[in-house]
Image 1 (cartoon, one colour):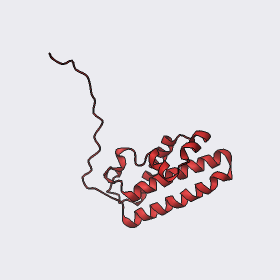
Image 2 (cartoon, rainbow, N blue to C red):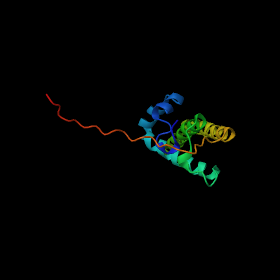
Image 3 (cartoon, rainbow, N blue to C red):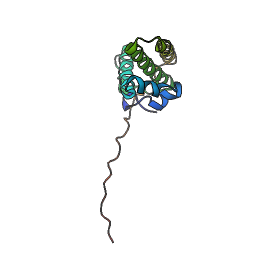
Amino acid sequence: MALFTDGKISTIHDLTAYDSGVMNLAAVEGIDLTVKLGLARQELAVELECVLPRDVRLECVVVTPPLKLWHAFHTLELIYRDAYNNQLNDRYKGKWEQYRELSGWAAEKLLQTGVGITPNPVPQAAAPKLSVQPGGT
């Protein structure tokens, strides 16, 4: 399992699994989904730091299914909030509120089941660097 600090928690593919129209919305409204994924991760980090014991670092938090759900729903909440505030168009308000409720539900489930913690975190390895070398004959 990945660690919270390894990078991506959810992907654009995860977002489209919950909301098939999110790519179209992003294109129409000029919303960068990758930026929203990052902002949601930062906001979850702040929330987690508030509930974790002082001696537990974010580097020890494991991405469990409830945490992944919370991140995906919170990202969708940020996207629809942004779309609503760009246009003040009520057509986005319902989904913004829906994903805000789902984000809260997922956060509650995470706290009920417990935040995954590992005492010996092993960060994800960096991508290998490949180079071409001439071969012998």
